[in-house]
Structures are given as C-alpha cells and as structure tokens.
Image 1 (tube, helix red, strand yellow):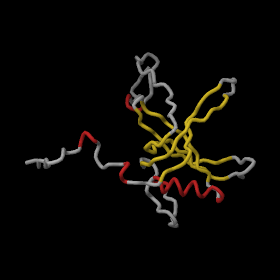
Image 2 (cartoon, rainbow, N blue to C red):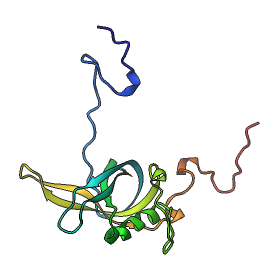
Image 3 (cartoon, helix red, strand yellow):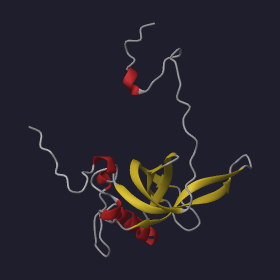
Image 4 (cartoon, one colour):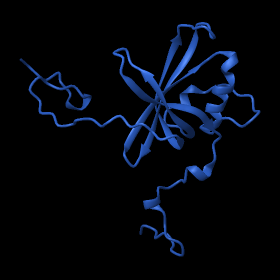
Amino acid sequence: MNDDYRNPQDGCLDWNDSIENDGQDFIILPEGDYNFTVTDFERGRFPGGPKVPPCNKASLTLQVKTDDGIANVRTDLLLYRSLEWRISAFFRCIGQKKHGQRMVMDWNKVLGSKGRAHFKPRNYTDRDGNDRQANDVDRFIDYDEKFFPEQDEWMQIPDGQEELPFE
C-alpha cells in the first residue's frame, strides 16, 4: 500500500505508528477569576428550550493556564435579545466593546482574544448516573490592561536596565 498521500503534520496516525501522549487530566478550576484565551469558536444553532426559542449560538472554548495544566472551558452564547447582556459582557471582556457602546459583533476577531472571567465548578450527573463536575463561566469581567501585560515576565527588562540594540 502506498502511503504517499499521508502528511505526517496533519495529525493522522497510521495503523502501526508509535504513540506516547496520554493526554492530561480534566482540570476543575477552583472558583475564582482567571485570564483566558479563546482557542475555538464555532457558529451553531440552539434547538430551543423552555425559556429561549431556537436561535443562533456561538460556542466558545476558553483556555485557562493553571499551575496544574491547561483547563479548556466550553461556553455558549445564545444570540437572543433577552440574553444580549451576556454577549455584551463577553465583548467587553475581550476589549472589543465599551460599556454603553453600540457595536456590531465582529466574530472574526474573537479567536485568539484574551479576556478575564469568574469561573466556578458546576455539579451534574452524567448519563451513567455518576456525579461529575464541569467548569462554568459565572460572569465575564470587563477588560483591564493590568491583567494582560504586553510581555511575559521572562521577557521583561529589569528596572534600571536598557534594552540592548541589535548591531
């Protein structure tokens, strides 16, 4: 069989490839405020429920870096007028909207955005009857530059030193 069609960088494994990545444990965030990066965004459709009829939805994956690893938190924003406040809070959180400002939602700029939110664990029972926990976004926090320094700490120049030019 000819394997010329297989690109090793596309993530596909062959039947006899070696494997070693065991993944990571699911991280439950203790309740609190955390910075996040939007790592995935999908347009979808909410089928409707007792309080909200069928409508568009934005499904977001928020990545939170912790000392224990990376927590990926999924959250949906339902595009429905009575929930407009939550969409507004999200866009304020990532710095695209100011309080009281009217704006057109620019979903093309959401992926890669950084924000801050209050997360808390939610208890639920899975379909097998097991008690589980998931991370939920309790509320989005308005964007504030102090939570997002331009450079990582390891890149910052110590006080009193000047950056050396490349010559």
